[in-house]
Image (cartoon, rainbow, N blue to C red; front, side, top):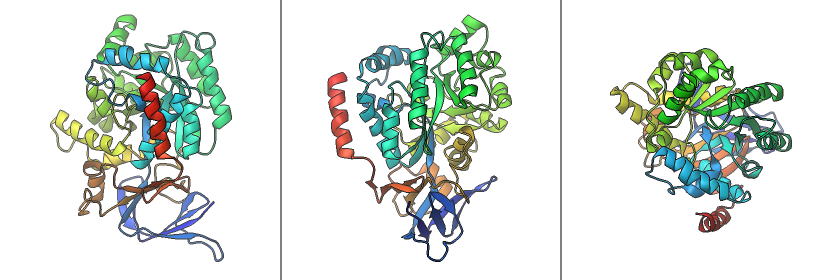
Amino acid sequence: MKNYKIINGTILTYGGEAMMTEEKTLYIKEGKITFEPFAQGEEYEVIDAGRKLIMPGLINMHTHAYMTMMRNYADDVPFQEWLFQRVMPVEDNLPVEAAYWTSMLGILEMIRTGTTCFTDMHMYHRQVTQAAREAGIRAYIGRGLVGEDLYQDGYSRFKQALEEKEEFQSDTLQFILSPHAIYTCSEKLLKQVDEAAGEHRMLKQIHLSESMTELNDCLNNHGKTPVQYLNDIGFLDEKTILAHCVQMQGDDLDIIRNTGATIVTNVASNAKLGNGIAPLSQMKEMGINVCVGTDGAASNNTLNMFREMGLLSLMHKAHTRDCLAIPSDYIVKAATYNGSVALHNPDIGVIREGAVADLIFLNLDAPSLFPNNNILSALCYSANGSEVESVMINGKFVMRDRQLLTIDQERVYYEVGKIVEKNL
């Protein structure tokens, strides 16, 4: 593995209290970050990062990467129609192997816009996993689980989830159990998933309290909110990742805080589908670990985390009518460091001694960032992803000077174009 000495760069660090920028030399040795110079005789490449910001790669904590072929396909329709009449019929008819190319397109977009790690829920065995491995991106991947019983009608998907873990788990690929939602999974199956997560030492993720329909159905069927329901069956704990959490009522946030679960907010998807705005200000005040996710391209319609970060802060300022509600440093932390907390991997999402070298290099002379009055603010309010020039994951460049090194972009476009022509 190649080693690097990176000089003259501006580095974004987080010391547990505040994010800050500083100019210092950074060393990458065997895929890890260090501030200790190389010993005499050690080989390395010198990179002059003058006028570059070097920061932890963004962590997109909720995606469906395969959905790229449905970008701008099911827009401006109600959520129930979007899901059950538009998206699901396409998913049901899509050839399994097509999801490799549509996932690769999603990964391509994420790398180009500075994401080095994503958490995915998919429907197509081995496809996003194979794409992620070939692209060299870090990922936490889960086969979507549904049904009444994990070992009967839900078993084929559960078996696929374990097979992927067995075949692909590595330094950069980890696996997560992913029951789809409380309205597609029975109470029995959710309890079985919780038990299986402990047995196989896996995290859990689930869509939760995304829409008013989900909330009202749960109240009518169980006499409690979706959060209360999951808590009462013992599903919630510090290894649980909850996507959306828009419709929070009563003691929902207290329960989430007390169990240590993580919330992934998906502001663009929630807004576009008319599901509302999550109470992020309350989550922040209560100290809940909140991460940022884009959701899939069928509902966002991008996988660009910089776009998501800007929308997240601006929409909550408008919603609360408080310009101080969600500051830029909170958003940047949520898009980087908080992901490491949720994924129980302290070596990602931060630049520090011994952390893995998942780094992105931004051009500080890009028109959107210049002049550099406040870099943290710029990352939230000014950056659009085009400023990302190079991306390093696990100590290896996957994009350098805007050139993709692990993905054939022309081939991906060609294959996805054919898939759209045949299936949409």
